[in-house]
Image (cartoon, rainbow over all chains, first blue to last red; front, side, top):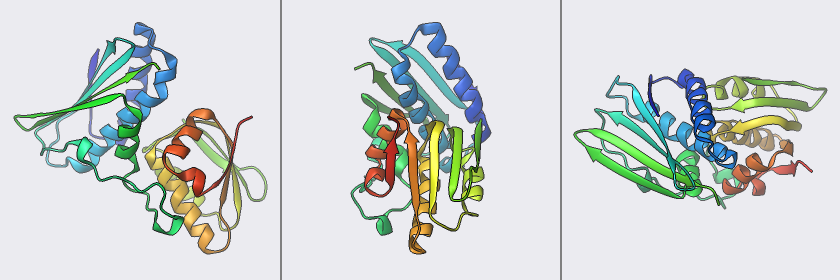
Length: 133
Length: 97
């Protein structure tokens, strides 16, 4: 199942509805829902925020995986950005040293079972798998 | 759908989904809080890093003035996110029984 979404945070509500539909149609374990919602939002928002050289919609694909779900987000006509290379966040730092930024990709890398990155012809595709434990 | 409002002096209730689209609304509301504050998250279904940023920014501002945020009725999913983010060491948090 796939759909394209405009480059706006207002699209998040439609992405949630799309995910609702996919989970219902494919009987995906509900325990994976939070992980999928969070990772899709963080990756989508990162693309909308930083890939500003394009006006293309962002493609989101969801497919059943062995014990869970495989999700891809593709951004077209953008620079390379591999989320696996995102700088780490020091979650042990004291309050005065903590800043709001950087947690999104940190959480994605922490929560998914695996993540894959492809960059071809200026198209940036991130795929993650979330499996039932 | 996200809602935030006062529930008596020093008490705030947040409900629904606090995502990146709703974070500016939450930030605007919490910017008006100027004292020690308890936020009841019992009705909060979801929070992303944008929402975490709102809580962190507000907590830092209030702590600088001798106050801070206390987060109560936190469900297990959101408590996991708080722990992964190290928020359990920055905030006073009470999870749902």
